[in-house]
Length: 176
Image (cartoon, rainbow, N blue to C red; front, top):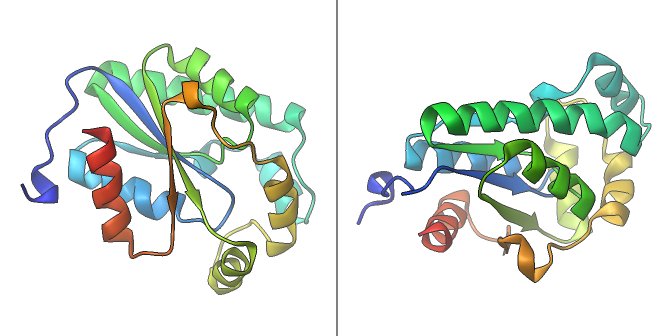
């Protein structure tokens, strides 16, 4: 079956592509949304101007900075799932408590796709990225926060050492 003809999920659900900055969340999220013919929500768009300026200045966000962002994104995902049946979102979702907060806001099935790569590759990607507020100097703080999803979290880890189309195929196979 061609990837573009992937069946729509039978039950309403949210799919969150997660990971540190530069891992390819937005790229894979957009590809999955296209394949599943559903909306894609870019988590970066839900940050406050204050949070963006803080990150642009090289300062890592605190949990207090993140809670309103996660609440806004979670509500948007929930609304999109209610209207469309499925939504794809890109969100770092670095800690379990962040993923728990998103799950609570969404109120339905959530699947997570963690994109992983080694630090050197991530730094190279960040160095080549144009026009994004997240500086490479914050990568180490994100890597330090990252908690691998637990077995009960409906998650898969994909290493981003293959082309985006291959990642999409692997994600779609896992999603069923």
